[in-house]
Image (cartoon, rainbow over all chains, first blue to last red; front, side, top):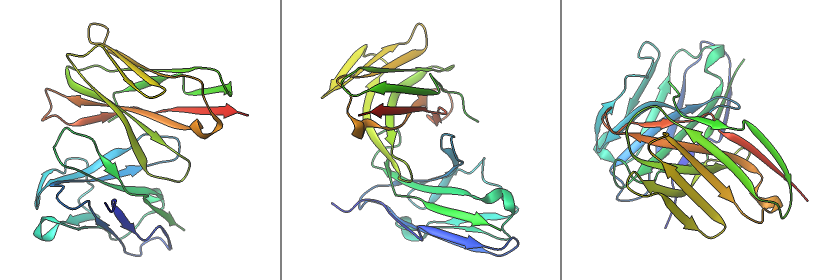
Length: 113
Length: 112
């Protein structure tokens, strides 16, 4: 069974540039999560989808961050424009049930210069 | 915001020793999960314990849950160098649309 796939693994951009991250969850998993993780910290939820509906985006900085999950399968997280403080690892996870085990991708490490 | 708290923040032991990590939380929960994260990698699920369970085992892992104290512990027995990683607890907040609340993690170093 293929795991959660994320790309790119690493991205270095100048501040004020846009960036996008892509996530393909495990087949059949209805719930998809985007997390932000700073060094030495735990994951912080940005947005959670149930199928194609964003059911929790309360922590998503909507002035610069956007996400979509068309057709309830893969998802894209975008930052425009990026700021220095956005440097972090962006983790995607999926689960079959909302409160069940989460399966994480390897993450996308963003460095904003 | 992070509500789960693991302690210790960092733990260094020798191979073969046992490692114990603790997690405290603040809300009523449906379940509590433990995850491992190797450096530069994603998180990997280890074990889930439901609120009506008190203890659970999986291989060298033993998890306990005390809902009266709102705390859980993860015990790794006979540790190996490969157990070196960060360990996180996550609670399923029963009163907040079952939102997962993550701790800050315990960094475990197992020295050969």
